[in-house]
Every structure is written in C-alpha cells, then in structure tokens.
Image 1 (cartoon, one colour):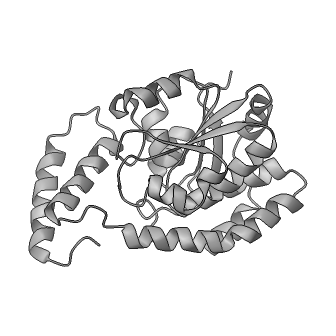
Image 2 (cartoon, rainbow, N blue to C red):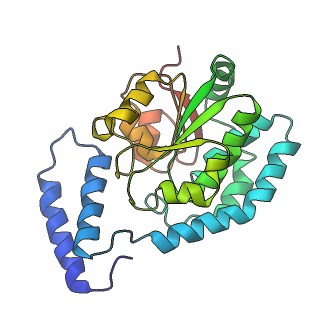
Length: 265
C-alpha cells in the first residue's frame, strides 16, 4: 500500500527482521507494530499509507449511519443495540482482518449475544458515573462508536473520545473523528501515541492524568486490550475477537463479541 517498489519492500523486510530479532520477551504486539509501521512510512516516504482506505471506510460506514440509528431507536433496549453495533464496528480492521465483510458482520452481529455477563455490569456502572472516557480504535468503526456515544449522551453522560496522535495502519486520528462528526457529540482528545493500541507509558502526561482520573473507561478493539489489560482502573473492553491468541487470553472464541470489565468486582 505504501509503495510498489520491490527494492523498498526487500529493505523494509530486512530492517524489520533485524528489529524483531532484538525484541525483548516482554514486548507487546503494539511495540512491534509501531516500529514496523514507522519503518514502512520512513523508507517509503509515505506518512499515511492507509489514507485513502481510511477515507473509504469512513464514507462506507457513514452511508450506513441512518440505518444504524434506526436500529437503535427501534430496539427494545437501545443501549444494548448501540453497544452491539459498536462491537460489530470493530470488524473494520485492515490490520487483523483485511478481508472483512461489513454488511455480513452487521447482519450477524445484531443477532449475536455477548460472551459472559459484561453488558449487565456495564449498564449498571453507567448509572453510577457522569463521564465516560471512550478510547477509539479504527476508522469506519468510529461511525459505529458515534452511535454509542450518542446513546450515552442521551442518558445524560459526558463523553471524551480518544484518538491516535498520528497515522498508524487504519486507526482513527483527529482528522477522522472530525470527518465523521464525533465533535458534535463528544470532546475529542489525542492519546499522544501513534501506536496501534494504547500504552500508557508512551502517552503524553495530560492523557495519563485523564486516564487515572476517569470515572469509567471504554476501550475499543484488540490493540487497546493488548495495551491496557494490565492497567488498573475502571476499564471496560469492547471488541470482536479476531485471533486465537486474544481468544485464549479472554477465554473466548474467535468471532465472539466481548464486553468485559478489567475488574469485574
């Protein structure tokens, strides 16, 4: 996607192979992904290889927005439907799932139940807070996130939506959030990192302070689960399981919709 120059392809592979060989055992997929994509962008002289694809994903999801709103408004439990749609939106991921079928995933997802009792706990805790810190994931997906944010606002909650500091794969940046109108319903902040997931030690101090003071945090996608699952705080993880490694860690199955508290107590 960044270049058709096969010489650059070879040189990128050589540098990445050398880098991977030096990774410490405690390194996360996020650490590796950040370095790999920085290498591609640097050597191909392309700051955002996925720019066109991201715009296409946002446009495609925006075309579904009226139908998504109708699904929520007609649902017996609008919050449950909005959360399901946000989880289904996590299908839009060119990193983990480049061949995704959004329409099929949408049709299947609205009939799918969450693995475990996480939604009930999530719903109960929403009634105890006034503000939600919502950490976003991918482009296209953020339109589905907007549907859930709108439902949270309808419930009287203030929402802060978090995006990446710089382009990485098809993750959402400030430009994408503004493009889909997220600023109409939430405050938008950047985390200070351009990695495919949130690692607090890499975030800027203002965001770390916001995270530590948050009443409730909703973190979307596998990358944010990988980066934040070991952090203390009132975090709920919302994702569609896309690989056996994450499935094993969650005690779930590939394809499951998961909404889980980091501290279910």
